[in-house]
Amino acid sequence: MTSAGSDDQTLDLPALLERYAMLRDTLMGLEAERDELAAQIKTALLSGAQAETELYRATLKVSRRVDYPIDRFREAFGDAAALEVATVDRKKAEALAKAGDLDPEQLRELAVVREVQALVLQPKTI
Image 1: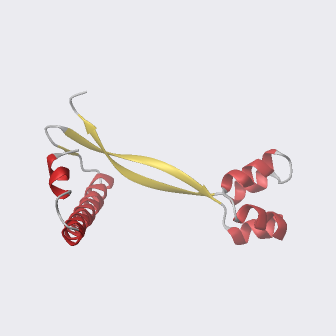
Image 2: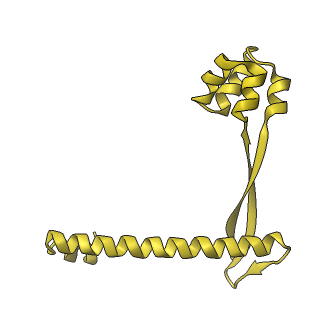
Image 3: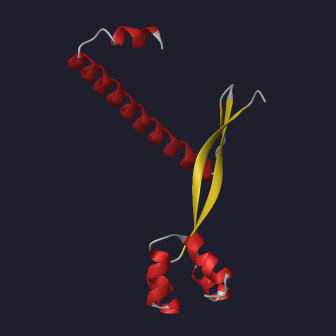
C-alpha cells in the first residue's frame, strides 16, 4: 500500500469519506475534460487533420456494430422469433439463422451497421 494509503488509515470515517468524494469528483472532472478533448481531436482527424506530439500520434480506430431493428425483424420473422432474440443479442439471431430457423439472407438485409470511431494514441517510440 502507498504511504498515502497508510496515512488514510489513521483518518476517521468522515475524513475518509471527504477524501474519497474529493478524489471521485476530481476523476469525474478529468474524465469529462478528456472526453471533450477526445471529441475535438476526433472532429479534427475526421476533417483530415493530423495530430501528434513528441511521444504520440493520434489515429482513429473504426469499429462496426451490427444491430437488427426490432420492428423490421418482427415483420420479417414474426413475434416468436423477435421475442426470442430481443431479450438476447445479435449472436442469438445469427445462431438461429445458422441453425436454419431463420433465413440468413433476409437477416443480412435487416442488419444495420453502425461505425464508431475511437481515439487511439500510438506511441512513436515503438
